[in-house]
Length: 247
Image (cartoon, rainbow, N blue to C red; front, side):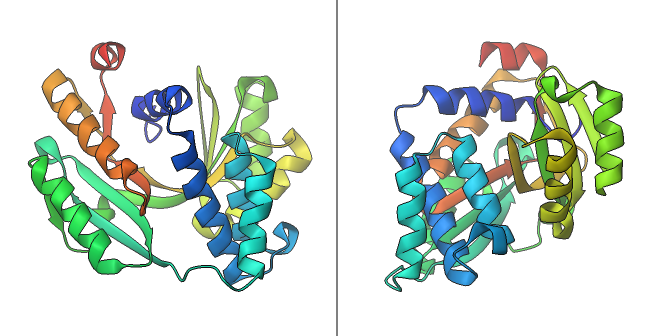
């Protein structure tokens, strides 16, 4: 399906198997703390915090980690993080958007640049690749939420723009500014979603059929995501069935 690439599925399964769960929880907690610090510490009154908590729960983040992250923001002793977006090209010219949250811009920029360089890629200026993506809200429901037609109808009534259904579930897309509103409306009709978050959706993903390119790209993405300052990495690619099966 367009937009929701096979890499997302591979990444999800890989994440469940990884031993570095604490690193994931740390990044989720950082987003929660920043969201709570920027607005109200009550998720019901703070859309960004509500979505951050939802994302944490969907990744099985412990309740005490979530509560501690919110209390940290309320205590006033939380670090001052700056949100930065990096854009560049990885192996075979695949466009990548890297979202970071850092307390040291120079450190993060230096690290991200070195990762791209070592992978044979090139870190560009802001806006150099983001025009190939749409900034949208993505809400995911399991297939058990209903058939494609009923989910499509519920999504349209909730104000969504598009729905894509595959063997993994229903993927509902809406304007980035409408994510909280659409997510809340869908909860009333379909129940709670598995995830609801802002993403960079590729407009025209490049299919990767070469195993060597796929391995180099996965290595770069893994290296980026292993950096404590990096929150999300998105690429405008899809993996062929053969390559996905090998990976």
